[in-house]
Image 1 (cartoon, one colour):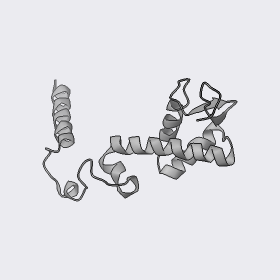
Image 2 (cartoon, helix red, strand yellow):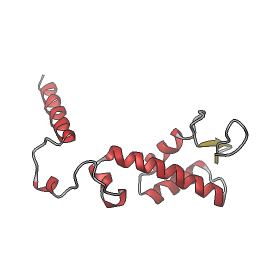
Image 3 (cartoon, rainbow, N blue to C red):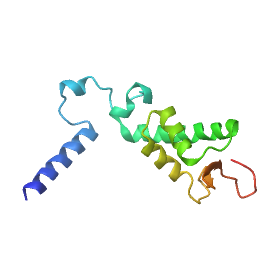
Image 4 (cartoon, rainbow, N blue to C red):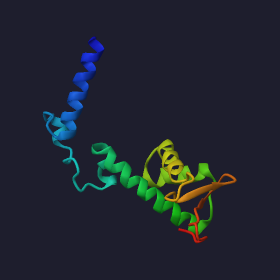
Length: 128
């Protein structure tokens, strides 16, 4: 029962934080407001993870598409390392982005063939 009460308190505090109703601490007073126009390299990753992940995921797709067009198809591990380095995210996060965008789905930007990441062709045979 004590664990359940603690969990409820934690969830309530988290909801208040997300809604902007949490009491301000000295550290939180220095942070930019939620949904502010902070760029990822200026601290958005620390203040709004959902917004950061959305922006970083789009940037990962753009970066890898451009990389493939200019330098050819990297293998999966190299692609993940390149994304992680370029966007300052963990390799695991980069893997998650790449796996999501390489599933067999019309919206997916990439496909993995023989271990290499390539740009997925549209149904009419053209590349994205």
